[in-house]
Image 1: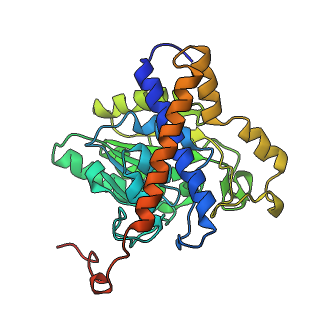
Image 2 (image 1 turned 180 degrees about the vertical axis):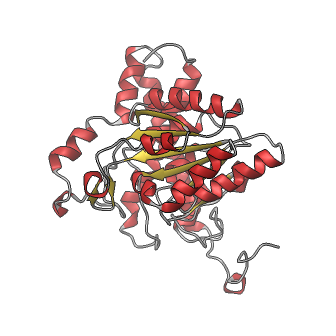
Length: 325
């Protein structure tokens, strides 16, 4: 880790990753109580992408996500209390208790939408970028998606349109090697995913998605080019989810990936790697990082208490928020 960034930036990156990890670990702990009645897709192991990308963003930048949205939401500044309340289906949730884990929204921080439809938010993100450019407004649009999204036709349509019109949009592909339980070689030919973006004349980058500094630096470069008016950019980050595709459990017994592979990727834990680097570079002491961890855990516990005490939406409000005013 180079010392080209301020200690404040490095601490913010670490804090963002740790908040995502601790929040999702708490979801794992509580999910079996059966009070969270929505499916949930956890990003434990992939926190560096959310933290490194979103620390480069400003409030005017709009973010779109997929079914595995918790990290993107929290890193963009979304409310932890609002997110957990949403998972509990409460009226205080960020989507008023109507969306659950896969439909997070928080317009206060320009987290526009998350949906479980594979590649579903990519064209919407492009549409927002088109509007920003047409109206000469500041900000860029960011679309997070997994490696399987590049197999969808709408992915190519969106990249083609954004390239043609030089739109201010960043495409972020989190390549975690699997679509549910199907490995990448079973779904795609032996070529780099980034080549698909290059074919649409889009500036393309690739980086280690478990190295938060690499994520931050690569994103910083890509966004600088976008803001200069050169058009869209595409980044592929290699990373890995530790738990099952959907749910709070391990799934090494299913046989679609080996325990050895899982353990090898867990050794590349983005939080562990970054913590060790910060201690080596004396960015912070072990005591300071432990204090930060305790503060985050208290924040998570407070958010859980808030979510559990919050009321459910009233039956008379069932038809609200279905259509725009």
